[in-house]
Length: 74
Image 1: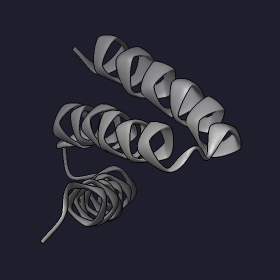
Image 2: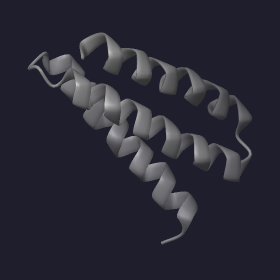
Image 3: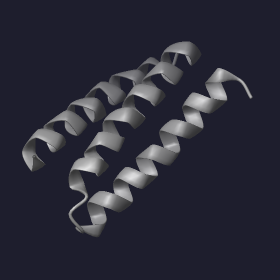
């Protein structure tokens, strides 16, 4: 499996997990926002490799939201 595919799908899976953890409102918000940050990094790297600069810009905002979310819930 190549790096592009791994980054893309790892980013997608961690984003799905983030969404479910935060939406469940079960006390796992810090873990969820941490996954959002990890997802943004993975998809950001994928976007750089694939030259998808619009998606890369979006990932900066998702990464920032992940950081803000972690600090807000800690």
